[in-house]
Amino acid sequence: MMLSLVFFASVREQLGVGQVDLEWDANLSTVAHLLAALVKEEGDAWERVLMRPNLLVAINQEMASLEASIKDGDEIAFFPPVTGG
Image 1 (cartoon, rainbow, N blue to C red):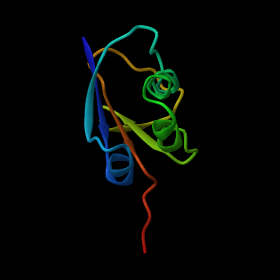
Image 2 (spheres, rainbow, N blue to C red; image 1 turned 135 degrees about the vertical axis):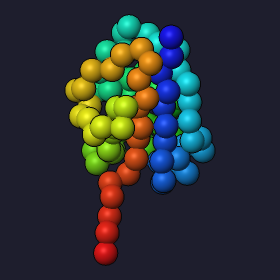
Image 3 (cartoon, rainbow, N blue to C red; image 1 turned 135 degrees about the horizontal axis):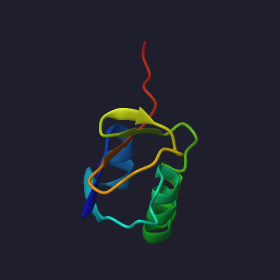
Image 4 (cartoon, rainbow, N blue to C red; image 1 turned 180 degrees about the vertical axis):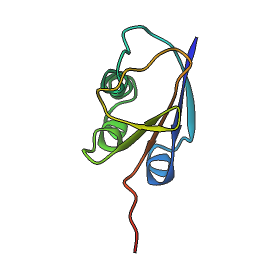
């Protein structure tokens, strides 16, 4: 029973990690709950990166909001906003 967390681009660089497998916890029912738990566990550096208002999230490769439900076995990806020129 796991969640697979994947971090891309500058999010990965700032956190210093590309992927984390996290044991599933039924209390982590939404992306927002997951982020709060990660910040509590990992501290200020993670809070600065993961609590940015423009952070993008995908669940199982589909864009999602912070209020989106998550479940055991999901892959949750975090990445910065896409910019173009």
